[in-house]
Image (cartoon, rainbow, N blue to C red):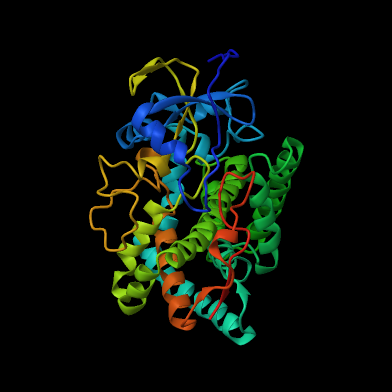
Length: 402
């Protein structure tokens, strides 16, 4: 597939939300008036932004919208450097199917059930540390970031002393304009170099972790190349840390903005599972939502023809507010029952860590609300700002007291 530069007068993307965690107003207008609209990225490339629920489902599941094509030379891109072609995120079947089958057992129900008490213990440790230190505290740096980096490093088998370095690399890798392309490329190489060294160490001393299992698979046959093995580690780390950390912080912010719902959750902790899904639906976590795709042939979608070679960006957060699917979609309701949100995607790229993220969010909410009674924001909520220049629109800080 070849790509040609195309002139465009599309809207500048990403849009700027009025408040952290909220959906930018442009999404609602586009969903109603122009559900498949031309936008221009900070890279100068253009794409079709898809804002409606059903159209998002099509983009996420139709094989004519390719992830592998986004790695080809000249392909339109949203982020500073092209995706890594060795990443499972950047593959189509059959390569994607092969790698996903190797990693999926690490995220099955049995493994997640075994992880649950481990995560609860880590939550209790972090909350106890907050209680001992006393208020005020920053819920982002002292809790929301610490929990998922601990969990994902434990799952993969990365040493505890390396967590801060890993978190720093992921922050850079998921930036849009916060870091220059050479800085992003350097972070990718440093993370891959680190993971190559970790693979070598685990070959010498295997343990009960995901990386040791994948190394055994790699060394017993031809199911996995050495590059794929290294990049799989990077995929697990980038997919399992920052998005979960940001979702935890935005969830507390959302509850602070809806004190009646917060009080109800305190009184009825049995509502936690439905609250988690509603928070996942309601919070606008990323600048766009899903992973960019490239059409491999001309496709009719939402009243427009997307030409082969053109990029498509599924705006999942917008789809999660589609009034044709969700009753009173702009209302936050932790008892919402019919909640088929697309936060974890759809189709073959449905997030492998969805169940793990749900467990982490549920236990984080339960542990903090139980361990820090009276938790409330320590600054006016309107003073809070989202992380700028980043794919993940989390909070740099969330000052709290109790």
